[in-house]
Structure formats: structure tokens, C-alpha cells
Length: 381
Image 1: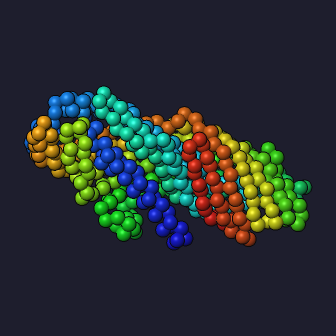
Image 2: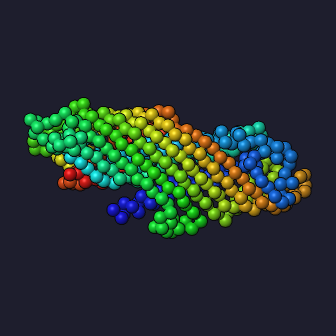
Image 3: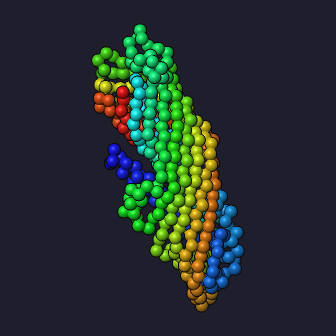
């Protein structure tokens, strides 16, 4: 399991670094917009044209509604699909009980966003979302656990409860773990990460049509099952990105400069999903099972994003034939809020490989522009 754990850690760090880079890129590319929430000391602010000052100071609402909230929306949509795709159910067939571990991730890339406010244009700002969570998975057949034997019992011993399977999953991860911090340091010295991820859920599946196979194990129909679940995901992430690179500023046609400093990023999100789906599948030569399905999910929750940056500012303003250069300190803070979509439809597809009592599963989900993958290993008893 050690390679899987390291893969999980690297995946988490990649996603979080990417999100923090998004925030940093936003602060670096469209810094002119950030004067709407500015605290500037020194003489650099005094040499800005009054028209630029006024527009920047009034642009915060446009930036937060047209950009920050949209980025948050993309991040929350990815969190919803990751939350749904965490149970590692495959075709939905359990003989006795199963236990395993998996990694669920989702991401999307939407069209870039252009924020327009009066004479200010902030073009092609990136709009992406990414979420990744680990899980411990447990599943059991309701008939077996209530004493009616395994679900593949002979027909004369079959019980109605064999049509029900229960799936449980959960994991709580804290980034204060020493191994994680060492891995972060090896990846990028100027990145500090703290916080944690919690993920819990349950689903019960009912086989409308039970599974059926030939006596030789060459072919098996997985039946058709309906599922109803309750999944919960909480993310509380804190990132400090210390960057020594000076970012360029272009404030109108007359003011140019540079700005450097640390970016502080905090993302909080809670998502509760009630997924409902239908699944079926086919197994060939015992070894490989193809499965597919479709469903929808009702979602509740909230999320918030707070980030700030503070550091040295150097400006040069051209007035006719004269150029004035001054320095100071610029501090900026912005925030946004978003809710998950009330409902989300999705399709399911994947492969399950059977190696005696070991099962390797790759399960994918897709909803509009979002894709999610769940990769895991489980032991079947």
C-alpha cells in the first residue's frame, strides 16, 4: 500500500498546488483589479492617476461576482462529483463482504473568464476546479450478514435479502502529518500546507434483477441494481505560497510596475450529496467485468475562499514626458462564496479485474464538463 499512499499524497499536493497557483496567477496577472481591496503605504500610491484610483477602488464587486465566485463554483462542482464517486461500488455485486482502499479525484477546465468594469478589462483569467480524496471502503450483502448465507447460494437457499448490498466509505486526513510535510518540501520549498479533508458516506443497493451466470464462469450478467446513498465531504485547506518573483503591473496606459509578496489562501467547503443511480454490468471469463450506469444527485452545502497578498510595490507613472518612480507596500484581500449545484446528473463506466479474492477497480464518472476517477483495490470474502 505504500506506493498507493505516496500516489495519494502526490495527487493531493498537485491539486492543492494547482489551486494555489491559480490564486497566485490571478493576483499576478490582474493585480490592477485588486486595488479595490488595497492597503497601500508609501509614496507609490500617491502618483497613480485619480481616474485609475477611482475605478480600481470600485471594482471589487465586479471581480468577486464575475471571477472569484465562478472559480469557487468550479471547485465546488468538482468536490460534488468526487464526493459521489467515493464508494468504489463497481457493478454493485457483493457475495459476502468486501474491504479495500481507493482514491477519488475530479477536475474540470472551463472557458477562461474576462472581467469587465468601466475602463478596466481583466482578460482570460483561468477557471478550473480540482478535488482529490482517499477512502477506506467496506461493503456487505444484507442477506449474508443476517445469516442467510452468501448471495451466490443455490436457488433453493436464496433469500430476498440477498438482493440488498450496503456500501460504506470514509477517511479523515490531516496535512500536519510529518510524512506529508516532508513530501511537500521536496516538491516545492516555498509552499506551506495545513488543514485536512474528511469524507464519509453510505449507500444501499437493491437488485431489481439479480445477477446470473453460467456454471463455467465464462459469462455473468451482473443484474440491474438501484442505489440510494448519503455522502459527506468537508475540506479545510490553508496554503501559504511564498514567491520571490516580482509580478508586473499595467494600470491603464500610463502606470507600470512590479509587486511581490506571499499569497495566503484558505478554502473551506462542506458538501452533502444524496446520489441515486442505476447500474449493470457483464463479467467475462471470471477475470474482467465491464459496468455502466447513470444517476443524479441532490446536493447541499457551502464553500468560501479567502486569499490575501502583501509585499513591496514599485510603480512608474508617465505624465507627458516625465516619468515618476516610487515604492511602497501593497496588501490585498479578496473573498468569495458559492453553493454546490442543487442537482447533478452523471454517467458511470468502468472496469473491475478479479484476481482470486483480490479486485482491482477503475471507475469513472462524468457530468457536463467534469470528470472523476476512482481507483482502488479491495479484498472479497
